[in-house]
Length: 311
Image (cartoon, rainbow, N blue to C red; front, side, top):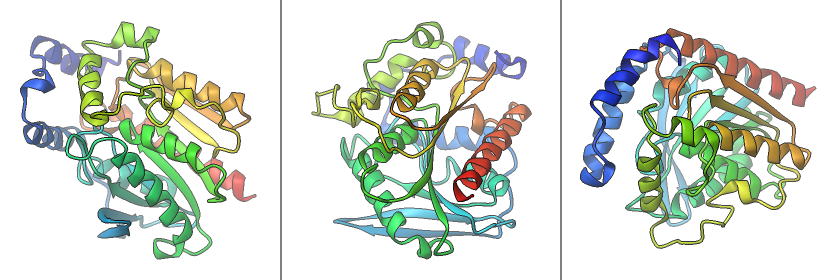
């Protein structure tokens, strides 16, 4: 584990967070927002940041569009935040979107999708699907009309992006790339990394499983690939992928397995592994300055991928 993380991780072991079942959901969300502020570092300055909405069928979802000072007009990135399907919003991942927008020269459109337990499965996935379809067919509302579309998600958001990209692969949406940042690929997966890092490394597997229960509600079919994307039977034609994993993350092995599944079906995949890092590290610039260097590296790979697709 990275030396800068050791004091923070040791403190979390000495003073563990209470089990989520013992806390009100609004209390947890407020704590998550504060944690994001404490860890993020100094947010990058944008040319403009504008809050808006997507008017989808029977619902209106909040969005935030980031235009970097070095906007190349090359692409717009539809971004879904993490938070175990029950936490997170436009503010918790604001600094990450800003840094990635600056690094890539791409516009970022962050989506405030519906959260459980108020809106259980498949509400969040429906939001991801409908937002993807809308942005793909209305790119000129967010960027130049010839801009490419990239989809990206963090943790639970990456899970939604993976499923949405797979489910729409035959719809001609021309998604240039999917970027999956330490996704969770199902509620019942048991891997070596989950065994080794499942407790005491900032992401507690038993907490995540509880949140899956809130997310799935009355839905009990965990073998549904919309819930467990590792169980998709065909991913042929899915967008080229970048999969970011952290060495000390219980979700590492399942993300690597999903990258392998994509490769099996002929999808171009890059795996980027951050040595010594834990789940959520990309938003820990205030704790680990090297985390920002890895954000920059991820951005470089994305820029190169879109550039190759354009050539």
